[in-house]
Length: 571
Image (cartoon, one colour):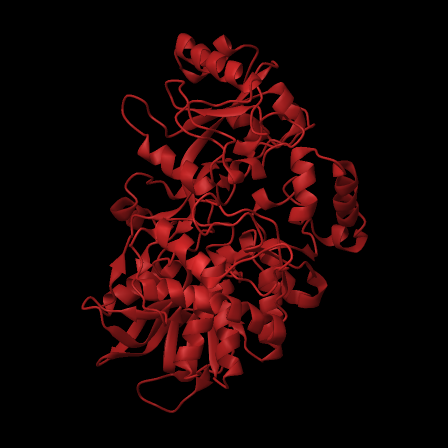
């Protein structure tokens, strides 16, 4: 077989061989491939799906890098010790200190290297940590936004790039940067100009509009993956799509290669130095969810892409790899729109004033403006037969609907102009009594909830759950609303409700790895030749979510570490 970077060998055992076989094509995988190639390794990248980029491509593409070389020191002061203190507090002893220090020490090095030696470009943004109130937390500049890129540079590969998740696009189709999205979301100063810029950029691309509804102006995860793909092209490393991992081949104490399936044929690939597993988690696997994610069983509640079925996890377990925290994920409340490939996570809408979340008996049970990870977790932890939370209902009024987006509901767009699948899940009522009847909630309970919330909101207070009291809450608030940017009463009829589920954007438990990203066996010893990064490995963040980009930032960092270690690069 002479496909991509797999070199044919004359052997009764192996069909081909490389130095490093990378399984997956997300940001961590492609970073590892770049580093291994720069260390003069023969590299092969395989991707199970017909499209490359994995969940990274569908995501916001933000990376969380403490003590960043790109942060302006005049705006942001940080240190490795502050970052370590912050992560250690959140992980509460569940992650070995050596792994945390490996991330903290190498994240800035990875970003510096990729900036200097690849097409990857980022800028530090004033996005607050999710728990900035904790020791070592920061109010911004650890999260980084990918620099946009013209998709024309990919040529035909543009159509092979997994698209941005629909929830990350304006009106489900137009790409926008965070600096463009922020004023439009909150309707703050300059939002009309930003809207005209984004829509004009999309519709004035007449040549592309005649061929496709897809935007060639790549932002977020699409920009990151496109830049990584161009970096691999420059190194003559191909991504072999529609090629899946079947099993790992272990010889003695080491993994020597893998069996892959390509075009209906099974082939044995020798990996002289390493197999790096970077194939995502198992959130779209019904059997594994039933076994491990017992409080949130339905894969359709996940916002991740459908190929994440745990193939790499199962292959590693079969050769003796240890696992941990398989019941953990990057939680998020999600909305299921019939017919869509993945659920829509509610990343920011919950923070905007004029909405609340109630359980099936009509009571609030959380701070809706907390991070999506905390809200998703709260949905599961508060579920009970007496007060079910799956689904819960997110309620909002006409004023909210006119001003702000809510999942698939766009502001200033009449209800009847929304797609039929969206209208099918939307509940609309002229009064809260009518809404209670439609939702099957006791009218007295719902009216008591609304009355109490509205009275407090008029004073800018939430004595029940403290909404708007933490820096992250206020990040997505409306600055025009005072005294609390996260609170307005729900008193403008008609009223609306959408069902939300305890979903996720990927699992974060997985294979046990050390500070070098080597996979450990059930005796705690490294399995030579086997590495795992990204959501295939148990996260260095434990069950916590420190800030925007705390998934992709560590994935790229440990991809950097794994490839260097496998190739014997020191310093």
